[in-house]
Length: 305
Image (tube, rainbow, N blue to C red; front, side, top):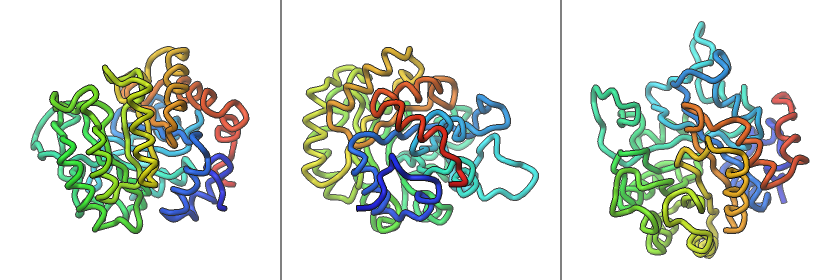
């Protein structure tokens, strides 16, 4: 048995391959926290990246949203020299790094920050580029209004699995309808979707946290987590509805509901403040699912360990 995420330091994460990282999350038994952030927004702490702020408040895994693999823009990183963006974020946070890629259409010249650019599309070329940059996980998902369908996600899983499946963790699923009304509420993830995603090669399957998307109940989520586990895959619940900016009592309720579903990984989104969850909610969520012992351990551990 290898190290659990709970007991891992920066040097441990740096040595883990795909299977070892998946095993470390599985062996933590529902006590892994993944936080999403947006790098090109102005950081909450000015010259400190949002990723570092997430790490400081108890995150185990950083997920970068709106990250263009051909034009990475992470505010708060040093700008006076050529920057190896992903590896520098790993160095500064001591944590594994993932990104979102989306199976949608490129939109040129749009002022909408969600509009897809070449380097954010879920395809083999971008997945290979992400792997070579040092990315540990690719989440195939959809941002608000992009129009990502589960059929599109399925096609992308197959393409990316073939390209980088031995090296990079592949996660898939939607945190909300992503602009597809027919795939809202309980149609966001059907049992058939789970079967298809698992058989196509997803290592982690994502579903909305109970109490976030309308209609997503504890019972609905628990049944889907059990189905995901039946394939030997990991399940991740996600908050992608700006409730990452709610009050601490509500975030703790959501956390405990997610725990009851059987989820292996807990995701908290990037829209509490612009580009990051409310930091105190990251800590509150962490304490709810694993107590102060493991939360403070993650917060206090030096990146030089």
